[in-house]
Length: 213
Image 1: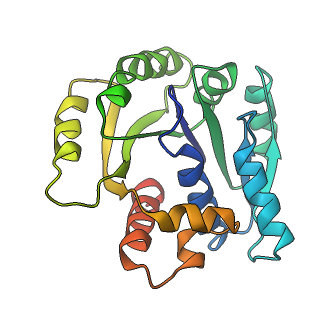
Image 2: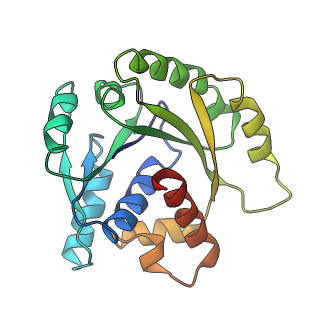
């Protein structure tokens, strides 16, 4: 399966989602590849930190850029059971190319008006990709939500997304937690860094199950 973690705006934690999924998937299946198509190379730095510290299992990663991403992913699909693509936060050739070959596109968005304004453009990008990649399924996951149960932004965002025909919303909500940043700095997923953090681990585990099961 090819999973794209992408978006049209920077800042909603795409690399955090991609790296946590990659570590979780690799713990279950050996032949998993993380493709970093963002020229900021954050996912690649995470993999390097992981390798330097000798953290197991090893997450295999490569960097791919520009329009050739599509053909290169098709070739890499012959070698790996699962591919996770971390795309940059913009309408880029890499994002458009990945949409043409992935099975599922996951768009992390913060529950804010600024992120909501990108949904129309994301919906259009998916609509264009569906003309070639008719198996594509696209989803939004709320990321960096307030852990305060009194804040109702997530529910409001869920209602807003229902107006878009090409994108559905995942049930999982991932909250803003410092443990995600600390785990990333150490080349780990939250499941590895702080297994006793029940809430963060449940969020990643639930997201993993929604995507893969």
